[in-house]
Each structure stands twice: as structure tokens, then as C-alpha cells.
Length: 402
Ligand SMILES: *Cc1c(COP(=O)(O)O)cnc(C)c1O
Image (cartoon, rainbow, N blue to C red; front, side):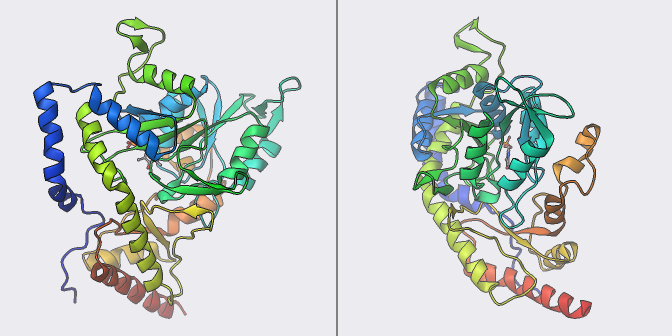
């Protein structure tokens, strides 16, 4: 018997009801000034988000996908270049690579963090690349295309292991664009620099999404790219605005990829709450970890001591994922799968000729992961309902399979 109310995966409605008094003045100001594009609300948000990310610059754009695309183009990816990322991510990562004119290629993930495995990245260059005699730059053996950039994805709210990735990038002259679309405020302890570093501040540029469900979400579509390089920032500003720095003087062909002023104003209000929301997410994760601590058969998120995870998602791993998801649905508990099919096996990339078995760690993760309800206001009693149902399922399923 289930007598509790439905437990949502994410509760955005309650959050926005609570914020209404703070958000309405943003709309009123925009209506009164008719400042819908650019202007002070945009500049204020860009300044504050850059400060939050410890970067010199932030460029507001229309989505996280555009943020990755503009970051790659501005950092210097050229048409025909190969850009290396992971198959275990949202397709926006590779869409942005393709839209920047690049060709995505993959290396597998680490089985505990679900992020790019730096050892696999090194093997990619050793096994699949040759190096130009004069420049030392890597070229892909089969396609003879230059490999010019790497996109580590900070999936679920935890950064990739950046020290070794940045070392390889230096060795192989690669551009690094962090896909931080799920990692607003996540941190990485760099042993090399002996300090904590923010997601989005470690590569040549970083990309953030403010899709409503992200840790920092707009009331619509929105994104931003961060960088410490003024030239990269300037290029991203031009790319988002039809390739112009001065109205109607187009240095390059660009895009319509700006961040709306109203969304920027809303994001400025919400940014003030982000640190507290992330702290609440960490507490929810800690409770989940504890409630699962005596249960075999549920792998909880692995957080190395070099990571400060912001738990955009709380993802567990189980043998019979489909069964568990159904069991929870019957108990009115919403869950998600991020993501069920690794990118190299998606129909959209059929023409690239990848096959099953090529990235086994990603493939197995995709088959076993389940995202449990996770949002700052999730209560302890809701968490107990969720973990109770999970434990009920895995202990009986384990018993049945013996
Ligand atoms: C959400 C997301 C994106 C894309 O962001 P949009 O704002 O939806 O365009 C890119 N990469 C990852 C990993 C994401 O989670």
C-alpha cells in the first residue's frame, strides 16, 4: 500500500511560488523600461555570474547548447576539427561540437565518477593519433583530421578529474571547453595548483545551461559561457549577436543567440539563492547516502576527495533498473534516466559507424543508472519513502535471483 502523495522528481512550481515576490519586480522593471534585449539587467547578471564562477568574463547566451557552441568556436575550433568528449552525456554536448563545424569523437568514462577517464583520453592520443613532425599537433589516424579540442562534461554536478585532462591538453596543444551545464558551483581540488577551482574556470572556456530544471534555472531558455580570456569573451559576444560588435558592422557571420534581459534579471535574483540551494542538495545527498549505507545492491554516487559535488542529479546504480523504476512508479515516485542510450549508439550518429561494445563503461552505466528525486526542498520523510521502496525492491530482487 502506498498512502503518501506523489513524490516528484523535481518540484519547480513550489519554488517559483515562493520566489514570486522577488521575481515580479524584474518583470515590472522590464515592462516599464521596455529593456528586453541587452542593457543593465544583462550586464548585472553577467558580472555576478562571472564572480560566482571565479572567471573574468561571462557572456549570457540563449541556451547551454549555444554556450558550448560559441565557446568552442571562440576558443578556436575550426570546421573539420575533431573534438573529443564522452558518450555518456546529453546530446547537446555533441550537437554543439557539430554546429561549431567539428566532428565529435569519444573516449570512455570512469566507472565510478561517470565522467571522462583521463587514462582513456591519453590512450586515445597514443593509439588513434599521429603527430605532425613540425608542430607536434595530433591528427586522427583514420580520418587524418586534426584533433584540436576536448570537452570534459561535469555530469550530474561533479567535475571531471581536470588536472590530468589539463596536462594532456597542454601536451597535445588542445583547447579545453568545460561542459558545466549541470555543475553550477561545483568545485575541483587541483593538486597541481593546491587550491579549489570552480567549474567553468579551468579550461579556455566553460558552458552553463539555465534550462529551468538545472541547479540555476531561468523561466525559459537561457545559458552562459565563461572565460578568463578577453579575446575569447569578445568573440563569444560577437557570435551571439550576428557577428557584430557595432550595430550593422558584421565582422563575421554570427547567430541570434542572446540572453533575454528578463531571463537575466530572473537569474540575478535566483543566483542569490544558489549557494544555499546547492548546500541543501548536498544535505539531501548525504541523507540518501546514509539511508542506503547498509544496503547491498545499490551503488550510490562516488565523490572523490577532490570533488565538491552539487548534485544536479542523485544517480544510483542497480542490476534490474527497469524493474526498480517500475516498482517506484507504482509507488508514485518519479525517477529519470540520464541517459538511457550512450551517444555513440544513438540513431543520429549511425553514420559515424560506432558499434556496441566500443565504450563498455558508458554502455553498462547507461543500462544500470537511475536518477532519484532530487531538489533542495525534498523532505527527509519523502527521502525515507524513496529509499524504503528502493531497498524493498533490491532486497527482494536479490533474494529472488539467488
Ligand atoms: C542541459 C545540458 C546542455 C544543454 O543545455 P540547454 O540549455 O538545454 O541547451 C548541455 N550539456 C549538458 C551536459 C546538459 O545537461
